[in-house]
Length: 277
Ligand SMILES: NC(=O)c1ccc[n+]([C@@H]2O[C@H](COP(=O)([O-])OP(=O)(O)OC[C@H]3O[C@@H](n4cnc5c(N)ncnc54)[C@H](O)[C@@H]3O)[C@@H](O)[C@H]2O)c1
Image 1 (cartoon, rainbow, N blue to C red):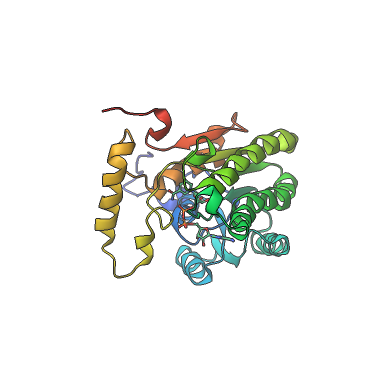
Image 2 (spheres, helix red, strand yellow):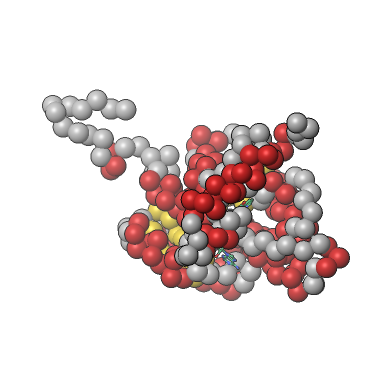
């Protein structure tokens, strides 16, 4: 922290060195949940962000709140290649270049494998796995042209272990780690580092759909989730999207300058082992 000089407060946001000063980061699924917190934190750390999603009203509102100098919203269904091409062109028009990507968009469906309709399986693959692939394919050349940067892929706890009833989701999240490792190898020569976050249970609409119900008591539903995870997770609570954003910041900043191709588990210790008592 800098000491004030002559009674002046020089700790203004504009005087502070941010971990992402000068960066332009493209975030998918950024209208709510973890993507929203990543957008907020990255702007607080000096980045300009391109928030993309299929939830246009929420995405527009977030970008407006953050301000047009530092945030833009663009519609992007990550499963559609032509929308990626258009969004990356629009992002460059807005901010000149792109040197960071957070592949965050994802969907979850519950079904035993033998009960999963093929259409459902394919939709989860299209959003989670194809979306991540198209992000790397479309944005990496721009990051390379900008002189290098970072890609953070959002996998999951279920990228590293099984979980019944979410087989389709787990398969796509395992695939994201494969994409992460190969992209890290293929893109290193362009100065691009590629890593993955593997969250456990995080208190967003995905794990806690009551968040989408305006009549629900959100404190109560979060407490109920905590109760569930108190038994499962050594740290005894559900995670916060802000905590995943902090990990994405680490992986997008110079603090992780010698790290690429790795999965980073953020799960309150869930994967550490099984507790008998
Ligand atoms: N919440 C958890 O417990 C948890 C755990 C592990 C991993 N994850 C992963 O974290 C990421 C963020 O999820 P979240 O927890 O913030 O949940 P969320 O449902 O709040 O956020 C997901 C976002 O992705 C967007 N999205 C969905 N389909 C899309 C598409 N076709 N194109 C573009 N955007 C689309 C949604 O509109 C939403 O804004 C996801 O990849 C999810 O799989 C979540």
